Image (cartoon, rainbow over all chains, first blue to last red):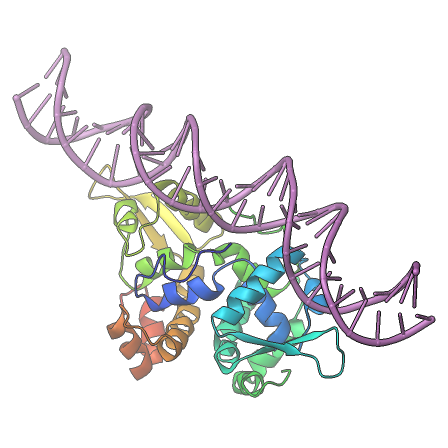
Length: 137
Length: 137
DNA sequence: TTTCTTAACTTGCGTTTTGCAAGTTGACTT
DNA sequence: AAGTCAACTTGCAAAACGCAAGTTAAGAAA
């Protein structure tokens, strides 16, 4: 299991953030939910990077425990659950935007999410607002 | 050793960023350099969180290989090396600023770097500019 | 000239986390 | 009664981590 928030609780705000989403997968899960509008376990499993099922379950639990996402039954599909970003999770939009902008500047290789990058470059405020409102950018 | 950039190279800008600094320690090292002005191995070892020496060595190598920092001999002290952020590294300032702002909003516990948080809240542009210019904010 | 000191690592080794594959659950559908 | 399917759980080998102890190299001290 992941390091729990607290073990390295130095009181530093960056350490706090890292204790919640500072691993290889959490931000990718958040990206799929915030940008691609993904809401189910099965869809998250099929993301671009191929997270394995046990790790995904761990991360979802950790994110839920830390107030980034919520989980509820899908009213339209008895066997499915719906994962959604909380306000706290959606407010990571600026962090995500800055990482995308930074990579856009420094990663010369061709990349996915060119559309998203352009959208952020064109109107960063709108990108963040839409995510903040629970919409796909 | 850390996952190398490439193994999960989905082409996503977020995945690119995570392959470079998406672990529990790299951003804390970058924080110490950018915000606290730390420049040596020994000072980095004594950071708030207590990174172990072998992990620190690994991360510094990884960050150097990925163009975030440089390493050179200290002209004033033959046995010391000076680590410095590159432009690419300093341009992570906005990412760091957003993480600090986010934590400031969502971490109710008392925290270190209150001064830095206030500085960013008061004048985010200045914070970023100073780091971009290689100065302590 | 031998010993000491010090910054920056490296090595060993036990513990923890990860990742792949296969198995489980439970309500509905056939 | 058997099949389906989303969402997990379990087992196990491989990789990464973390602590402690050891190494290196060159100038300073004795």
